[in-house]
Length: 259
Image (cartoon, rainbow, N blue to C red; front, side, top):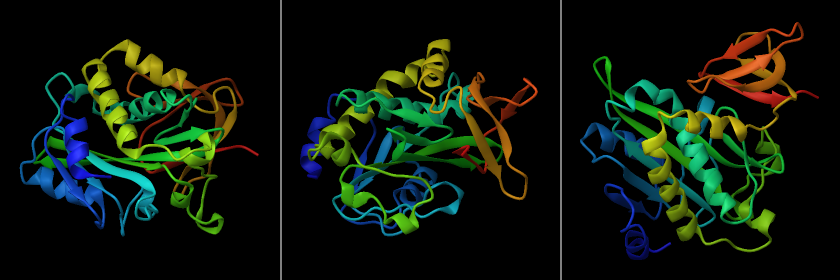
């Protein structure tokens, strides 16, 4: 990607400042430090390569140079957005979903933070928070998209089946345009993050709806139930074997389909 072209293509979108790196340890680490140092709202850290990329649950995120879209967006929540911070992962997910739809791809959201195409992971989201005392000062939204097939780790390093946009489309996608379209999605969804339409659209795109899944929480027995939908805050609603609803809150949890 070309930094000049990127900034030009984003000029009609609402965003802060773009920091572009040929190579970096972690875009989220850079964005967290920048946010703490006063980065403007909707500023972005973008890298061609991450050498220490991170996913949820302290997992490594594989980002070889020139194969993936890896960026972190800094959001400074407004008074209207603050009651809905748990929906921010949905903001990123819907923005990615819409960008993929422009390419004819029907993607789904594996709760809480993965994007699937044909049951394989093509993107992940990592949301982290910068605090000032007891108040949220900023939220960093890390996004990683497997653009080229070379971005997919070897099978022995995967904990869930993964694929790329290149593999799915059969052609090499334009990473710059994909980046633009995801940010355009953020611009479109951010003002609607507090609406019922937002949560309903997120709910509609859930993977494994009506299917039995297992929720893993470290140190506890798996929670088994059928995916029934989302709560207003984005928490997952399961239906257990006794036809009761079980609510799974955000945290150090992972979801897997039952065998």
